[in-house]
Image 1: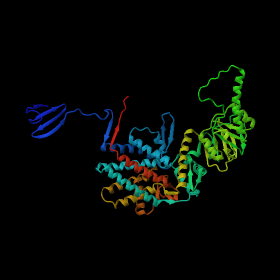
Image 2 (image 1 turned 90 degrees about the vertical axis):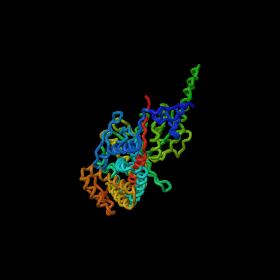
Image 3 (image 1 turned 30 degrees about the horizontal axis):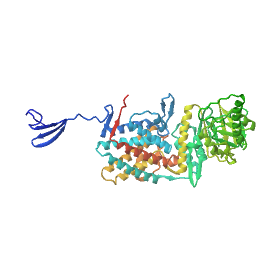
Image 4 (image 1 turned 180 degrees about the horizontal axis):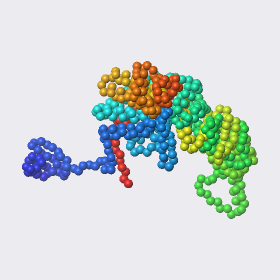
Length: 563
């Protein structure tokens, strides 16, 4: 060790230093101190951007509010539309919250998280995609003053979860049980759902289509209802024609034509066989070379191919089907045998279409022709027919006895209108499904939101300490739905919301809400404006839980990758 005596002008008073590499041990007036003269250690990438603490929380809140402002004007029957250009140059014209946010390109991680909320809501219950974003944005906006008052995010989150539990109890009290077999109630509910969309101008058409489609695919197994709309209710969009031509087929339609012009184009009470195998000569899996020295050998080889296909067709013809539908290819030779046997054939259909045809006709999809048996033949359809619409041919398998699968044919002026109609119809069908699976309704028009808001405000008076502020924040945030409805239809917002709050106070009338068309206060049960219990509860859960998640973020690191 090297001893060094510093002069009196140095930073430290006269003392001894012992130098060992870069570590310096300092003896100052009898005290022992350590000073590390190493260079600063660079842990984070210099290109990365980092936000911590309150800066990160306020940034998340601003991002969430920005996303909610995008869709705020699309709430209610007097909502505005958004026109979006997708990266491929196509136009999306819609007021569906999920469809809008799906096309919006955002860079902030909190904004991306908000957009995921809308997608989750759409997949789970089908409706309320706009409401969930608006509620979450308002909760986070009102949480900003709490953070500025130095209230710890953990305290805020704890209060939010308590408020959620109380809100769900109030929703349960306000809910009305209905009979899903009562068409009038289900129609009112779906009309309220479709009433905020473009297709509301088409009257009851979409409502009736949604109810009919859901009832068609409804199955009951062991006392449990199952409604698989995604798999068994296919929407087929055909531009042109009149809107009145939209209907639910009592069977299945596919965009395919028969493979040979001599085959029958219309068959009543057809026997339908579904195959999942190719009716062509089986090609070798690896590369194969033939060396043929004799002409007779070549003829034998061709004969073998013909024999193979002839045997395949013989196995099928033995069961006398009228229609053969395969998911794979169908050779010219097989077509020849089928035409001679009077069988119509369709090839290369999608697996999903085959599943629908199987469910509608009672057929079983067969993977090998040797395994066909009489039970595999579908006899549930009343009519097989090829029809031409515009320039394309469509295969109709209709008049099924008990289809349990259906195709919804939509006709409209343009592709954009049809796309929006399909989105509206999907929402309507999911809402109808929710009613059949959980037949509980809540009053719409912001009535239930105001009822929960008033209930939470009353409950907050019984809570002491900081939690009271947090509880009241959720109560204030839920007023955003009736307030936005009033704003979107041009009503006197402040006066109307104050009057509505006064009417709800003390639990006088839970059913009072805002009529989104007239902009006046009305009894939602008399106007027939309903929300499904599933949709509203899912909105509250998703909005509050996502707000809690975003508030607990105190560090955002966004790295920039090297080029």
